[in-house]
Length: 340
Image (cartoon, rainbow, N blue to C red):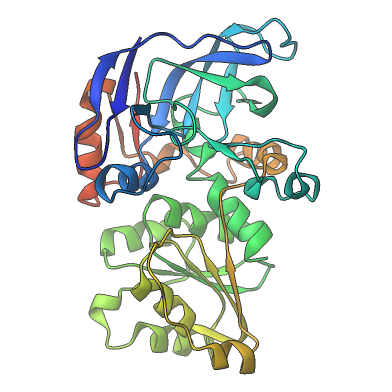
């Protein structure tokens, strides 16, 4: 089969012929319909963030497709079934999994990091972690549920603990950030979107944001948020992953507020501990999504409560994958798909 293979940082992915994956007894082989292009992959390629499995490695963790083959023990899938693969696989037996926190499983396995991912014609996956994708959800665009939609769902529902009537600021309106806007709106929050790109703020308004702030056009974005909300947002969610935006998110919440960090940042960020203590501000992280949440999330997409088709900017064939990453580097579009 054809695959886009990662051989190390600071070099483009190479289109190569590699052996087709073979199913284990409890696995399925998925014919990839689409795989989303994500900043996580860009961290490996551009910034030298190490993958758990040393290269060569097939990247890609946001996958939908159809079942091509089933292992002998697989009873709940058959060839031709439309499926979604979660970005992260879990063991189901460690302390965290048993506590219902499978997304921080002790032995979590991520496509395109620990094992070969879906920038390929076929990918192997455990049947136990796979979800049926209903006919009402477009197969290709449905791939973004695996990360760009599920990550905001977990952040809003389980980590930011959004309740109807909360005021929530989303700092960073890329693909994940805009999906966080629509997820928070669906949860009943009054959302304020924060980004440097007016076009993305316009999309945020279409998705239900009640106000927008462009930090490049104001002297103090945090102060603007406090003015808009009468003292600060109940919750600020940071979806960029830079010290500057994390500090900005922290500066815009009220007393007793909550800061939820979704963006990956490998640098130290100075935050005033005295303020965290004296104002009882919660600072929480959010990673991925629990498998138990996928059925409800898929149902939200099926009934149109959460949009996927409108969140996809376009498609690239596998042999043009490096062009797709160039688009991501330039900040163009929301989510690009690789369709082998």
